[in-house]
Length: 386
Picture 1 (cartoon, rainbow, N blue to C red):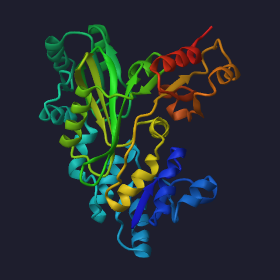
Picture 2 (cartoon, rainbow, N blue to C red):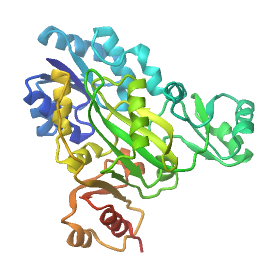
Picture 3 (cartoon, rainbow, N blue to C red):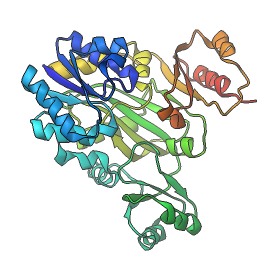
């Protein structure tokens, strides 16, 4: 099997996908914009061969790289990055080289929030009222239906980048006077806790692994208000959330991919779909998958790539939580005090790359416990400020 992996050095811990794939006998062919000699040795070892590009956005260079690998190894079976930024590029390469996976005709429904909304509705999943608007007048027509507040976000966008919370006409006018020249969707603000339904589907759409997380608040609030964030996996998934998540996996025809589907819980058992992402959840959540159930999702993904299936029997043994700290705050307890008191629960600490720090903080603790009360206690201790 020949799998081309785009940008294997970012995020760093994703090299484990390549490592497991290579161990299963696949040719793991990396393409990236970092010279091979500058790659971490663990990444070098995880690759069969590497093709260096001076510019990842130069599509002609990507085509030449894939052409080289085709000449050297034969037909490319998979082209992946597991990174939302490259979804459209992946689809274009798959079209040009006739590779299985999401194609160009499919990309808008997993990139454009307006089209996600239509697909959610086809699966009988409630969504926030909203649509793409191009003028103040169009926005005012919508807001006459929804009322304030509303949320404005790029129709194609990642996370909470360039997302705005609009509370009145003055906010709306400021938004249109300063917004980037891209399509924006405006939606009614939906109050409620944010949950996600996450997992991995095999080549036929069967769920190999799935779980759910509860977030302290949305990424929009985290980024725009410079808040801490913490989010925790659930040992028991609310039945209504699982049912909604499964309907979404089917509606979006998820095949041989990770998925991350976000919902608002507006009342116990009532879920409103926010958006879908055809990739692993962000940050270090793949590590949290492993810690919560003592499994290896990196190897599971590799098995799906090679065999199309990955039989797994697992239990959600622990709640696993990520809690951030930010350099702008002065904390009541030092890192040494955190480790001295809760080191038995903490399974990983991470220095967050700058590109992720607005959402995930500058430093993160990953910890687990079978008891949610213990998780809450540790979060409060880690994030207590002076």
